[in-house]
Length: 197
Image (cartoon, rainbow, N blue to C red; front, side):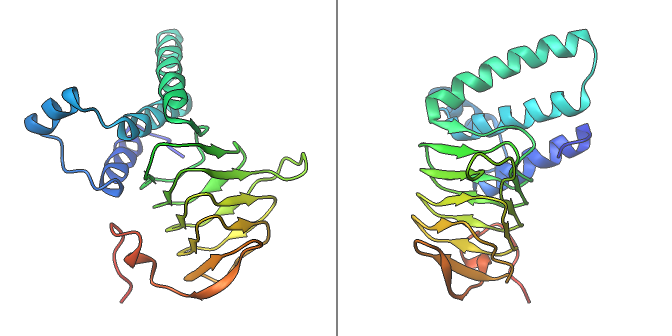
């Protein structure tokens, strides 16, 4: 959760790296005007919204927050994303446009790489949602729900249905219902995190 301007800037930088984007320069800004990167724009607005919600007080900042929320809602509808604030840690990489629905009670760690048609939610009308660790890859079409915990360094396969705990780090899980498939090195999938030595 962003609690200061320094953290806000760190989140922006880590998200940019996670998306594989170069440091902004004149050329990239010019290209961005002609062919905008809507996912990066969405993620920047998500972080800005979090920063203003968590850190900025006062009437003027509340007005600015309303403008940010309006812009955020507009691009979220365009891309098909329903992602609340303060759920994802830094280093988020949304890979494609398409439906992504995340419950506001979910907690997802650093360096999450998430694909389209994913749903992370509560189960059976309950309030508890998944707690997902750091360095987790979520494949297209994955459904993750309920009061569950997923460890660090896990890859969740395409169309997996996850409704129980997976507490062993460094595993690939897949299937319906999901089960452990094999051990993996997550740095081969999430390229911007350092390899384990």
